[in-house]
Image (cartoon, rainbow, N blue to C red):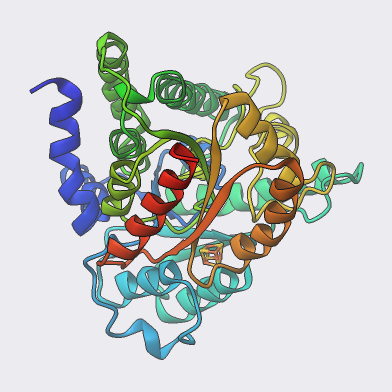
Length: 385
Ligand code: SF4
């Protein structure tokens, strides 16, 4: 088995069964290290890391966790990730965390933050109010103040000051991690026959659960090996996938989309761990650089409120840059931001004559036949048109 095959088989089952066990095991072997959970989408992980703690992606529970308690705190028409995250807490599976952070992405996430505060008094629960107006000259100072407020909480939790030097070092480290993830995505975009979406997803997702140094070392081994692969391209359509920026689709569903005849050239999975389009500058004031990167260098998503350019333009640019054949919208059930966006995307895609298909998924989905049949029909309609 190659390194990549080994990694994928080592982590796939863990990610499907109980992803956070990977981070919990790290805590067991490093009991003095404090861990802070990061709910999607955007977290300035550098602030947590510069305070001497490990940021960990709390991005759902996989599709094997039974929701037995969380339903009593939320309505039935709320997305799965909100309920599964609460279920993890209520069943004591988040005990290894010292803190958790949510952000102003949508009403369910906002409410989840309050429910956590009330139900888990021993956990430090933070909430970041991201700016809603990106065009104001005051936005940058507002976001710096917000990051300083959050940073002060992390200094209290860790007992360690966030110095400019430490923050600069953390930014450089995460720049390296994100650069390698961008390389991974570039391999799949250029030669999708050499890196499946399931492999790309697993190699990226483990980076949300391990220290960045360890993830960097994994990617530094995997990337040269992937560059050596030389698989024969299959008769598939090339798609850009959009809409899964927060709740994550089950890995079996991703495998099913590929088997149904798609090469996924780009996607918005795990947006918070690859949310900058380039490196954050190191020189100068690191807090300002971090805030400026959110305003001017971060990727678009359904939960980033930036009216300077329509999101549909970004999607169409991505479609054209990747030379895709179609767009696949894969939105979490009951995710209002993703489904509201779909209305705008649909109009823009139709105007450009770009074929597209919209599917809904749930983190806890078990049956994939219907989704697979829909994608197969879509693929056939394009291949044999
Ligand atoms: S999946 Fe959508 S609705 Fe649910 S928490 Fe994430 S952004 Fe909000």
